[in-house]
Length: 529
Image 1 (cartoon, rainbow, N blue to C red):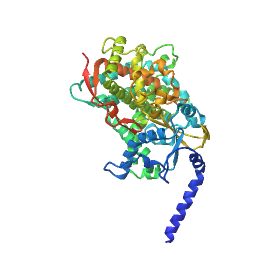
Image 2: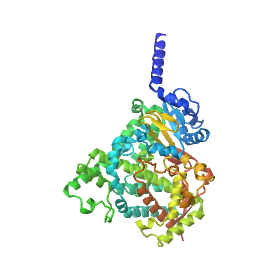
Image 3: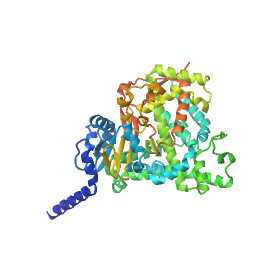
Image 4: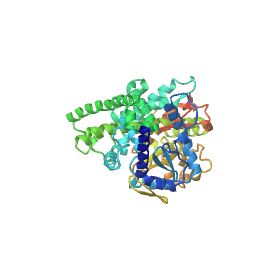
């Protein structure tokens, strides 16, 4: 009896300590619109339905992933922005108005990434995606020149070569039924990003170096589990689970891979100084060979300009992760780089497969710029592909690779009529905002590339469209992504015509760090006559 009384006393004391510590959060939350919450779990119950046959943790995880987007959509329609909801003990303020987004993205009080990004560090380390605001500013300043237009142009031969390998693989699918386009795009994007970032031919498309890909995929599964399972937010509990050992093993593989490359590069660097071409970073001339990202970082490190070896490894992993995801904003949580590219092109091909007239229009534009199928795409060709670019932009509007972006408030911050206290988590509903009829018209849920005609797009608030985030902490690889995406689309549509059995209104999505299509990107491929 005494033991029960002691436990109850400790619990009550803990509860009041917790309430006192976070009183300011509760005070502000009480004033804001939002759904009814339950003690301890907050509003997590709203995302959960009844299905699946699995262990309880897996059931909850799968249901939350499947229901999160639907729940955010309900919130955006039911409550005015900004609104509040709780996931466990964490207060989230959800915004879906471009004016509010502009305020948040440009506020010094909101430059920090949300704590949730810490869970991708096993893949990226302390890189641009995860760094605190002050350190991020220094890294970003030194990294900006590494993505200059002159350097990006030097990657065009790599883009063309790897995409042609993709074209050959897709040719083997002709007449063999539908397949998931994403599987092919993912391998291609990873090969491209590893070459331009690390200078290494991974040949994932040729089924080589699969241990690296398997490790990256396993890290994704671990990070997804940890992010969406509140129990695993505790380091103590997570370290007791099977996931912790898997995470450490796979993190050692990915970091070890980059470390081996770095050591070889350092040895070569000491033997020979950079060429005049590498030292000349102005925009006026072109490089004769690709200027690899890791070489740029190593140069900064060897010259004593801020970067340590650890910084080089972290940023290299971050860029591989980020450019694979965008190229999704690291995407599968650390694969932000190559996964984004794969997702965008897979969604775009699926949309064009559903809209044959638009696919034909894109094809005719491509043939007008590059008449001969198989010719390399040149940088000057890219600016002439207006309709292809509009198709890509419309794809990213409807299917942003990162449908929800989170920031953490570092200091009291004025948002609308509320003063948001430090420690609050701000969530930007990117997908909801980019499909809001208020900004995009009554057919906002339909695929319409002409929304991005200059005369139409100029009427839309600039922060109503943020596929690469916005403000000072926007995506560093945005230009890289657009270049690679256009090269891929040129080669795909020049060689093949795509069809699908899927219907737009049947598409269902879930959040797996990035946006995922439940039905997969199933298409048929046909050779053009």
